[in-house]
Image (cartoon, rainbow, N blue to C red; front, side, top):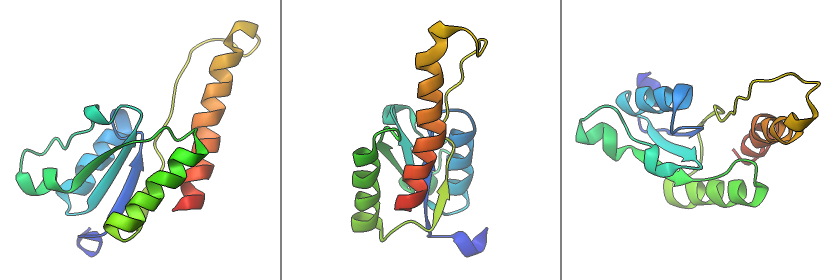
Length: 125
């Protein structure tokens, strides 16, 4: 990981689960990490060292909103010099059966977050 020290990583879905774990590990390894989430107040480095915490930049971004993604990656470019690493971890999970019509909004949200969000972020990175 030494070769990635001081590089810039953008991690989507960084406020919980796999995204939060990756954000933490990257910060501990010396990577500057921009954590994207709809809830940036939940993003934190679990390493208590000031160095690791200073490397984490929580940013509010709903990856399903194309303009929000564009604005976020412009901020990364303007303030940190661009994106060297992109980790797409944003996701939602609903249980149910595909044939249940009342789940259509949840199915659409899943598609928007996991497919369109990944597409928007990858394109901008």
